[in-house]
Image 1: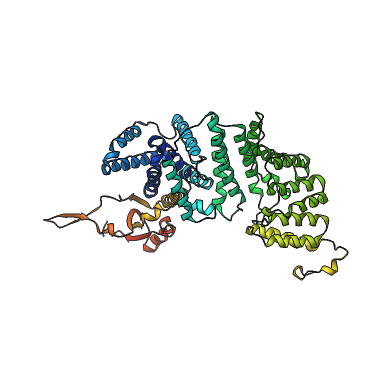
Image 2 (image 1 turned 90 degrees about the horizontal axis):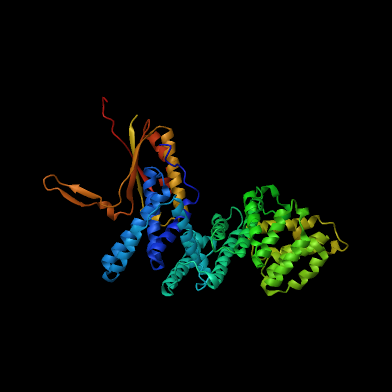
Length: 439
Length: 118
């Protein structure tokens, strides 16, 4: 093999290029051809898979893929024109447009145009007229280059259900004539809101997944970060975009420390901070600085500020809990949600003491939205354990274990439950012996 | 040492179901396997056979060119690798980690008959 021939492909090249190829061909052909375009791109990738093992990777793999995808799309349009006479003249102009488009991947100008194509595609897939879950699925499929099966796996859903969402969304794009564009002025605001919502959903879905359990789900975090950066580096970036990117980068930075070598969950306060991804921390702080331009203080801003307070603490003891509590209080006022309220209580415990936190927790206990949320009894158990009330804590952890949670979360709760045994006995301890704990 | 032909059969509809990420992984595995053969200096050649346009040719005086019987089978002959090996068993060993097998394909392994006296 000659030295000029690459022997390794850039990580995720196929996935990221497939999104770009779809965006590029859609610019040339229009969104009504989205199906044809996606098929052409898929066929180009399959051709690479069939040919490259027997030869070598071409010197410019992306150039090869773009050329083949374009030719396949051209053939498909010509074929349609033959079958459907009415479409023939329309197709002819599209073929001309495609044939005239010059440039190839790797050239600066072409790459810049691609980023622009991708951005327009993202904004189209996140159009507020589309249902929210369809926006997420379409963005992952069309911009992210994920397969229907991968999306289904990531969202713990059926492949056929995702496929149906995609079909409906594409039909809606055609029927409502949703186009590729960069909206500006007042139109941009709802489009960006909707796009940020999609990115945040994608990220949270991935972040909720535990290490090793489901690799596809973890890749959602990477994709959310990638498209947030695309948005942040573009002309439509707003302080809110930077805030969301800062928030996600700072949280994703902690992922490597969130599980230990045995795959067990590690709480933030016990994490080895040197294991945090320093590049993501730097990226997060960079965009955190950018998000403070302007007077806007969105929910993303507040969450980014909380993440940055954690990231800038040298150790768990150094954490500025007073500031974090203040931020949570503002966040709760802006988006009243029981989950945020529960997170705030953890900050109350750190800033004002366990008793105060337990008192506030009691106000939350009856909230309907939290009845199936294992973290409510889990937080309660941890607080009780800190006060030395091992018996009550054990009851809370046992209740948490009855609620839906992932395997590592379950093991974490079991470890906490076992700790309850070691708590020094209280006065009436002997009257409440629990056979389950083997006391 | 004799040459061996590795004829790789696969079902192309399986490829079409793969995600871009998985396709890239598959290519990467093939390249690594190919490099292994290369580094052992036993790779003689390789080639991909075109999927379309294949015909079967019969008859001398009335030569007939027809579509092959292979178009009716699900598995197609995708391509070949030619390697050198000490014997058939050694050639089988080289097939063991061929990614084609991992993706549901089969390998037809044939020794190229050495011509005596050469």
